[in-house]
Image 1 (cartoon, rainbow, N blue to C red):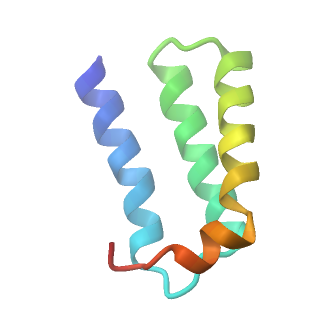
Image 2 (cartoon, rainbow, N blue to C red; image 1 turned 180 degrees about the horizontal axis):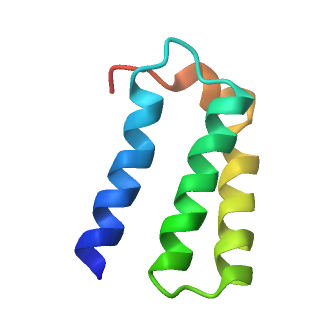
Image 3 (cartoon, helix red, strand yellow; image 1 turned 60 degrees about the vertical axis):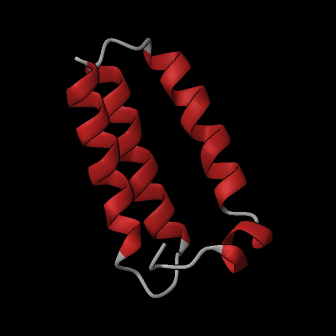
Length: 72
């Protein structure tokens, strides 16, 4: 189960690596994939949603966006 979750999370983050600029749409798509992976791994939907909402909120901050490099 953990291996499958890890693979799905890696896949979700790889979507961001190829982007020249991380937009709100990129973050939303990635967060959606993370939430699906967590729910499929039997994490309670409310907990998965709360977690991904906090991640999305932090990822959309200007400091995060200006410090993220697509190559890292």
